[in-house]
Image (cartoon, rainbow, N blue to C red; front, top):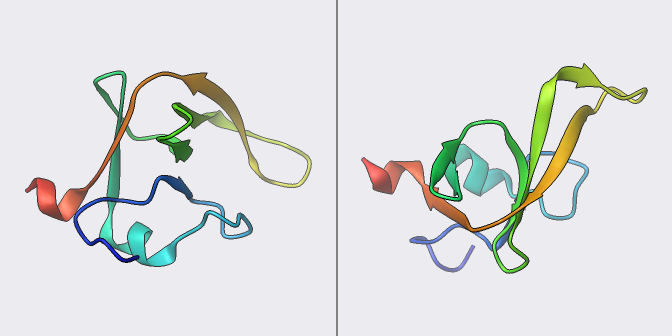
Length: 83
């Protein structure tokens, strides 16, 4: 992570994903989607304008959370800078 003031363009909480960044997740990344704070974001992409949200506690046959992909304005931020 070269810039410490902005989160990465794309980030995933799944360790198997190529977009997983443990350092950023340890620091704490918050996401506003269409101006509303979301706490159930599994993955986001700012440049493409989408978020993947987990749907309840349902899981697929491999144990991964079931998700829904929504399009709109995505604003990630580091939680330690927001305080």
